[in-house]
Length: 389
Image 1: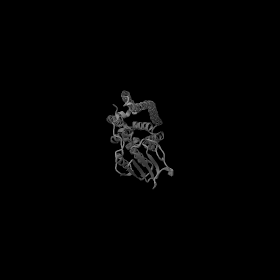
Image 2: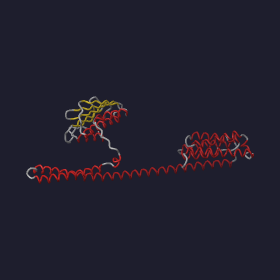
Image 3: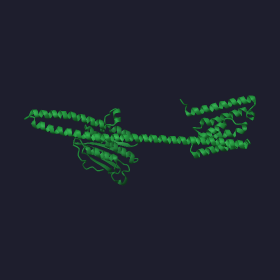
Image 4: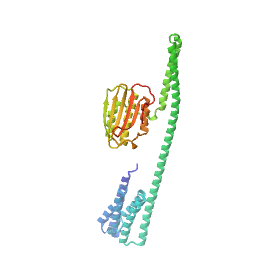
């Protein structure tokens, strides 16, 4: 198992310091280091400072460059090179491999100025200048190659991820298209079965008294057709159900009793909403209940997105034969002052039309925006009457 990058940097810095410290002690005992050992405490301090850029180079590269330049400038004071030589090369490599080319060039330029100053103060020979310049160029070139390779690998990974995502979406679209085709075919089968059941029920009613045996056959056919229809309906639902839905726990669909929770959630999102219920609440068909809840939810969502800083009011009115929900706000209203359009409003119209209700979406009487939906209790679906969108 590989060490984290910061631990590897610290370990490298500690190891380098230990190695140079050991060599310094050996040289001090033999006198082979010459001027390097004329001030042992200062040499040890510079040696310790020289490994600091290695430990922090990935996180605070500006500080790493600054410390590296300072330690290079201290070389003439200690009479020879310590850890700063290797530290400088590592810092240059890190800057070239991790920073943008222009930033890396600037950082390396500062380091080169520090090296040049140290060489001038130490009266270095031309060969020393050439060797130092070659080392800097090699470290910078290796770091640049590393950065280019990492960028290339990252681009390849992104392309692979994009290609995989595209393949998954294409496969999913193909599956959904096939499911829709199968659903249409099963819908035709179910519709045929239901038509047969209606015809056979009418025949049984007409022949029940005069020819009970004929009526019995018709009822048997209705029974068998009903069972077949139920099986086909189950297959139809299996086809339409998303694969991921089967793994999720089933929860009750929301309805008007859940508006208080919805208002609280919208309030947490930054929109103050007042909820008012007028009339005596009555039990509603689950489809009507869900339709009215979704309309209020979509209207409040649109207010959050488009109305700007404002307040909203939700009114639920229970009538003798229908339920009305009104969502109003005092926001800036739709662009141009006219009725807005969009997928959300189209969904509202479709839901209300399914239950033969009416829908208005547009400017309010006192400005802002208003969504008003009225849905009857028990009325067969028909065209949306008087809807305006």
